[in-house]
Length: 325
Image 1 (tube, rainbow, N blue to C red):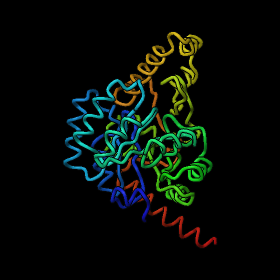
Image 2 (image 1 turned 180 degrees about the horizontal axis):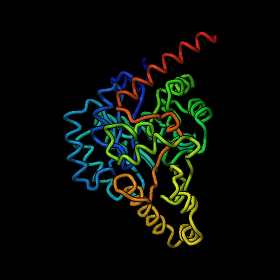
Image 3 (image 1 turned 90 degrees about the vertical axis):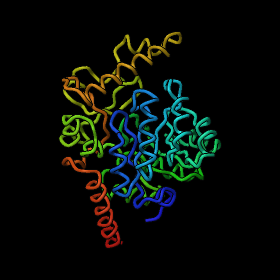
Image 4 (image 1 turned 120 degrees about the vertical axis):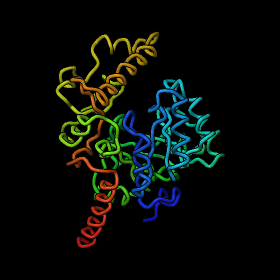
């Protein structure tokens, strides 16, 4: 199977294990590489730039292919230090999110790092293309976390029509048939996150993993409570109790021109602490990020077992399609 992803990163299958805040870790990246795919981890998953540097050193020594996700807007106060760490220990690729990748492209691309940018529409895709990005990730409405507004079936062909960069689809893929569908649309592969939350290599608590198994697509809801912008979470009893929308005061503060920057920072901080306690601690305040592709997770497996299943299903889907035509 030859696509831009497999040829560029010398991997067997066109899958990126998507970077997931608080979820992705070194062990998952090692397991991804062993399974024939590549994994990406948010730099913010380490509390300090020093811890991030220590992890990057180990990854460079032991992991043949991995990526780092950088939040490139002002909310990430550690961005400069994270870029310096990546200059010292260059990953195979960087996925940029929520801002301009200009500085990342300028400093890391000359080191051989491929710069891949999250996009949700053509306008932003054309901007990062002009800046010199190597590829784009089409974050569609099936994605977990901060999803885009447009279905993959529209977004991927639209980006391919207007842009010249390789397109990777992010969101909604949890089966081999789903992977085949985005490849058939012209995507170079898929960025898959939520199904990997329940893998044995993941460090979140068992309650979070079991929720990925027990809940399905119908249980995913958009909430502004976590970060101030729509984010997909599992509709647990606690989420239903607190509601999905910001209350009047929260909404007012986030719209006030003079203080909205600080209000959004406070909302984001409180939301991230809530996610962290739900992912790693014993709490009834269960707010777990996930996308609708958890519909296809029926048990806790290893990363390799998920990848093997996806590729078996992909082969079966291709055979079935050939029979139909």
